[in-house]
Image 1 (cartoon, protein in one colour):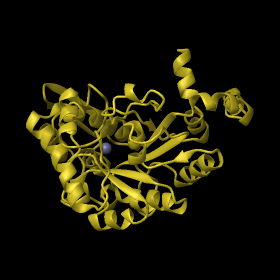
Image 2 (cartoon, protein in one colour):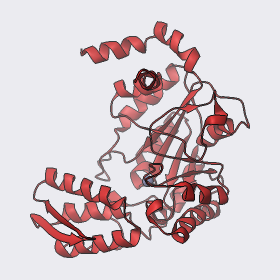
Image 3 (tube, protein in one colour):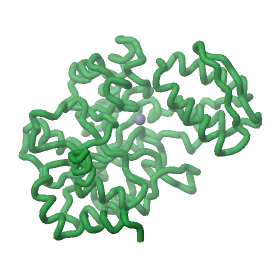
Image 4 (cartoon, helix red, strand yellow):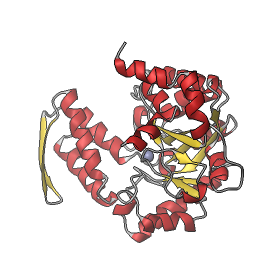
Length: 338
Ligand SMILES: [Zn+2]
């Protein structure tokens, strides 16, 4: 057993937690999940067994798994601070999230909020990052070299390791571009790598449809707006950013019976992927708050100091040890010691 595991197990033990937890029980945790592993859908991501193990752990350790909107009611002082609150959010609305993830939450009768990209759900669009991955994974060419937006790109794509790092670099680069530029880049990739992108996304990249969304609503799943097409808002014009935010809420309200009143920024780094301008549009659209993707606890003891339009979330860990560190406030203590 490693020293790290010994130390964490000790800090998470009941005697130590009986000292730590009363002092930090109002530090709420919001987890952010993405894709799930599904053999059927040939997708890779979170392990559903680990998720089930983590939910069971929370339940046996007195954690309060609440819905996103319940947390925001508390955060905006319309209800009392919630002790030991944990919230689960899942980004984008892919098919595996309906088939694998929603089922796990249903088994535990736990609330979960899925932040959906409306056009992915309407099946009229597939995300830019999915198309980039699809092209690079499907090509028979060993490499690619091109000039785009005053920058030279060279990638080896002959094996899965090189393809993975090329996809990662290109997807990261796209976070700084408006979507019309991203579309140009996808055209170049498609032409150079000789891969035609079909109109309908293959099953691994497909969204759940509105019918599924409505069926899941009856099983404790809530849906929140995450734009129409998933752009990095700060890279878009005022008009486009405003439209993406406003229309995503309107469409969600038209298609669901109990939409969340919280918005979720695509990619979600404050002052990088969204700015004060976008926060203003979110407020204007009638949302009560919004989610970023930077890690951190939500301090319900000092609710008036929390920026409700930029609330942090922890990425869902890929192992139990890291999960325990978040849940038992060890990340908070580490921050204080830095
Ligand atoms: Zn997203």
